[in-house]
Image: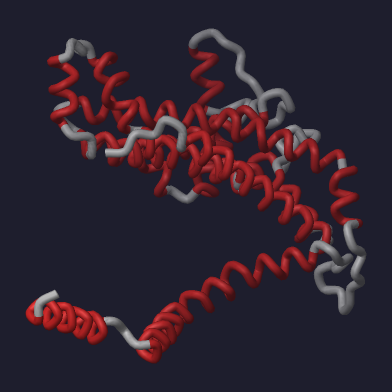
Length: 315
């Protein structure tokens, strides 16, 4: 090897040695990174992990709200929960509520978003109108719905009597109470889903529609199948997951309108948790219900995420 080549190789090694961080420098960078992460980690520990650990520990006790002491009872609360008829009834009602509200709110939100985006005027006005239920306080809206669904002077029964149909006791009948709550849940969730779908539709490149039309997709339905629906895969997965979690957390309308009745026909898991913890003061059993609720929400999120990741098309 020539002297020039040896000199060049030596210079390269010298530069790499100079630019490579030393061990002490790497240690200093790691310590700086840990210091920067520490506030967020402490906040997460205090706000998220701390309460979760406290609830989990409380579920293994017989603690009652206000009691000066408690005892460790192991899995007794969970055994009682699995043998409790009200728990299984509230879980069934919650799953039925989710099964109705999620597909209806997602389908209606997508349909309204497509109609608004296809229009040429008053788009902002329509977006505002459909988003109003999301901005309104749900408890206040629940009281309005209580008057609308009143069996005697309610607006819904009045409209039905106007067309010759006999009205119903929507919230007082065990056959219709839960379905009435589902209708209110769909009404409240549609606007939020519509906004999410609108953001996804706007981000689809116009060139894809032009290419689909050149390839023979002349109708709006064909363009929806070939372009819109595949490109909305990530948004749809997100909307389904968020709608399912929010539906699983239903409480306000149940507590205000039916309080789980009549005959537990509209009892849901969060309302059962509230009753056991803050009316019967059984905090240990309420903590066990909370753990069960968190497990179901986690499983629901994982299942929906796995299903949503199949066949997802990203831009």
